[in-house]
Amino acid sequence: MAAKLRIISELRESFCTELEIRDFFCNFTASLIYANPIPKIMKKNFEYLTRLREVMKQHGIDAVVITGTDPHQSELPPHHWRGREWLTGFESGNGTNGTAVVLMDEAYCWTDSRYFIQAEEQLKDTGFKMMKEDGPEAVDLIGWLAGHLKEGQTVGIDGMTFSVSLAQRLQQELSDNGIGLNDGFPQFDYIYPDRPQRPKNELFIHDEGIVGETVDSKIRRVLAEVKAELANAVLLSALDDIAWATNLRTAGDINFSPIFVGFLYLDESRRILFVDAEKVNADVKAHLDKYGIEVKGYEDVLSFVAALPKETRLLLDPEKTARGIYDKVGCTPVFGGSRVAKLKSIKNPTMLKNLATAMEKDGVALTRFFMMVEKEYPSGKLTEVELGKRLRALRLADPACVDESFSAILGWNGHGAIVHYEATEETDVAIEGDGLLLVDSGGQYTYGTTDITRTVALGTPAEEQKHDFTLVLKGHIALGTAVFPEGTTGHQLDAFARQFLWNEGKAYYHGTGHGVGFFINCHEGPQNIRLNINPTPLQPGMITSNEPGLYLEGRYGIRLENLIVTVPAMETEFGRFYKFDTMTLFPFDTALMQTEIMTDAEIEWVNAYHAEVRRRLTPLLSAEEAAWIEKKTAPISRSK
View 1: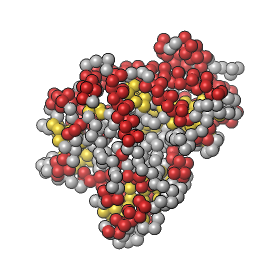
View 2: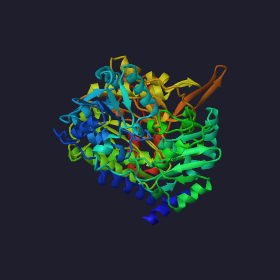
View 3: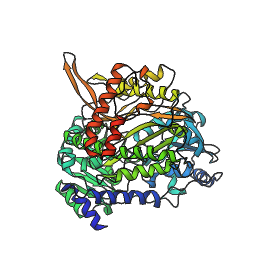
View 4: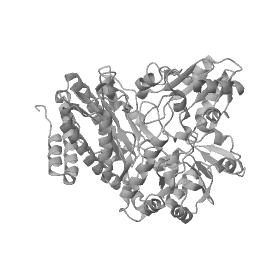
């Protein structure tokens, strides 16, 4: 193990260690997933709920609200903090979306439209009822809670798993109705005796030649933004922010993401990384010493912020900082942080150049995967689970790919309509007959992070399927070819992707695009493209997904996703204008395109994109693979 850790630390000096890094990372990920599974609640077994209600009585709590996150507001936290899943039995696949509310005689679990079908199934006979947090039947959790409790009652939460902003919104609504809030109720400390420990995997260094910037440069830029927000110190809680700022990564803390558990404090005279001592080996210690970064214990952060001098103006991101941290702060807190988060979201030219390489590698793996699907599909022996294993193996065959960037979504026909479906041995189905296969997947390459969705026809597609596919494709093209003035937000562009579906009374309710990290998280802020208002403007260097979709429960799902980067378009008397360049390299299924409802410009876009895919991938493929790509990227026309 020590030898592997030394190999990883040498990544900053050579690319030749990618295979060792990949093996180390994947072994850790696999051990985390399979050695520490979350115990599932058995149907009609209310033991966990009974335990919780007994503790609630002891502490004078009438209702408890349980998020699915950790003290860093992580989308997919370590198992140590995934108590909501343990309690409810609802596992939301590639995210932790889900908030539980337990009263003395009722229990509910809120989730969004990506998981409605999955949650309904997993929550059967658990004592929990699913509640919708978006869509036309959405129920506001905080409003519901205030309306169902009586004046004088108390709600309990674990303040370390609530952001400052969420806890404040909850407290305000409850207070307005005479209801109290106890934010020091760590319910799982009382009821979860077999809770997994906090992860303590060792760190390694991400090559600064790949990243294109030193730690010192990043910290100086962070502190400049802190000063611009009228603060003189900052506590970074978001794990991706910390990994980005320190050029450090690890294997195993977070599934499918090389980030690590910790906090980072910065001011003009001190730099302190709060992590468990076991995570820091000699090479990482030397790296931290080089940049003047002290190391303190993970749990020391609470006493540290409590002892900060009164004159310290500590910048805290209220969306990422835990209420439990905020409660301990002894100096002057300053809410902000968006300027700091934006630094990470803007990729420099070195990153973009390396990500282009990652896209080529990803395109090669996907070519081999879909060729295999086409060849073996007629046998009827392929299943969703088997395809997931094959896709993972094909990506990891490239030494630069250290892991998947999330658990691949492979949905055949009706399963494709479950937005974040994850095939299991219980749900697995054979890929046979006619239908649509939705494949949403990605890789964590040392060169960058990828995320792509393709929906393909196997057998003979129905005209309705082709029509819906083309509507989604038209929206994808409309967004991908948009030109917009400086200052435009994703919210203002979102309807570009939905308009053709809306024209026919069809819709999807998930976001159209999310930010993507660089060998960090697949989902990254602060920018996005969705119906919800987000004030963050799209800027050059930001990488965002473009993934409209359509889902017909029990029948089929369609989603088409590329990664796009914001780039300058022109400058006129009206100011600067931006556009998107598409980075993903893999063809769309032309067999599903109804060209009669496509415009000339849309057809030209498909042909130009496919020509670029063919140009970039062909030199990397075997003769047979190149011939397949040639066929799949053949120009389309009205008379095809």
